[in-house]
Image (tube, rainbow, N blue to C red; front, side):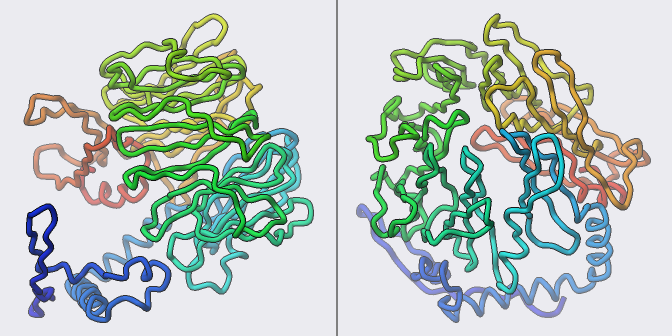
Amino acid sequence: MSTPAPRAAKTTISDTRHGITRTDEYAWLRAHNWQAVFRDTTLLDPAIRAHLEAENAYQQALMADTADLQKLLFAEMKGRIKEDDSSIPMKDGAYAYGMAFVTGGQYPRYFRTPRDGGEQDVFLDGDVEGAGKPFFSLGGVGHSFDHKRLLWSFDDAGSEYYRMLVRDLTSGEDLADRVENTGGGGVFDADADGFFYTVLDENHRPIAIRYHRLGTDSEADATVYEEADPGFFIDVHGSMLNDHVFISINDHETSEIRLIPANDPLAMPKLVAAREPGVQYSLSEAGDVFYILTNAGGAKDFKICQAPAATPSQDHWADVVAHREGCLILSVSAFQNHMVRLEREDGLPRIVIRDRRSGEEHTIAFAEEAYSLGLQGAAEYETDTIRFVYSSMTTPSQTYDYDMATRERTLLKTQEVPSGHDSFDYITRRVMAPSHDGEMVPVSMVYHKTTKLDGTAPCLLYGYGAYGISIPSGFNTNCLSLADRGFTC
């Protein structure tokens, strides 16, 4: 290509902190008014905008000779996506709640049916809400425990500051209440007379939890918790039994939880265990007890403890599932008769069911070498049925209901690939590769059955190694276009 790549101008900008001077010749590319730009992109420095546009133009020119291939790949990838897809509704009380897309639509629509099936009631249509707006993004969407109200949010400026609203699910109309500059998520109190939400500061950090009582001015909302440490983030969510509101406070390695009675929203939040550097924990409600997932006491791959709901402080924690090095416990959920955990060993996930009365455990097993598991759980506490999603690099996503008492699994849905997909045309493998320090790293790969593994096939390799994150070996229709052209992915 004859056109040279755009080069950012160099401007000497020095900054002295703690007696150390740092010089950055490209610091001008960081807009000094970036907080304002979040809300209105027209405020971006023209010089920065010009450079970004020049880089975009260069990329387009550089890739011009692949335009036909790009169109072909896009058509292939789009052809594998079912545009009018929908979820299997999940039972919750008198209803079952689900989400669907329509052909040509851009946003999800949320619906509910009578518990055992029937006509759909669409109570929030993203395409309707976003119509005519240059940008639109839905945030949290959640119904009240009595199924009468909906708490939902949206951002129509691209700022990631969300407006929260409350919808009457009988009339379909939004109430007059409006709360601005939120993180997008929230939770009703026990009687849905008001809701808790996160407030974002000018640096886009969730800084406080506030409570809004319906029918009042949001400017008068009470702050129930405010975080002083700028290195920590906060969130708020409810419990399945509608009796607790959880305030979660964490950075990448330390956590802290405070509890508010759902029927007393302005009560002083109760500290569970004070933050301790490097110690993480989370709570799962289980009637008169909490299950605590934690790495306390040197349990680097986590363990599960139990504590009375009335006295959940750390001095009451007792081990239920002991720490086992090399087996990372990812999550725990509790139901009336069972405790369910998702764990990962050697890079592979598994679901373990524990009978809360006998302590007996069993595992939901799968045969493929590499696969992905997602635990959706259930919306109800008094149930023996949970839901999970399984896929592999060759097997499209499959949604199952699983009876924890009988151990029977029921296939509810298999991901549809409109343009067609034959799993037998592809091969999934899982190999262990030695790292520089001698550790063996699991690598999952998929390739077409006609591809020769003689070192000549091109390879697209992706890896990530921070925060204990493992890349799931799930079904990705986009990879198939490469596999069909002789790639190993």
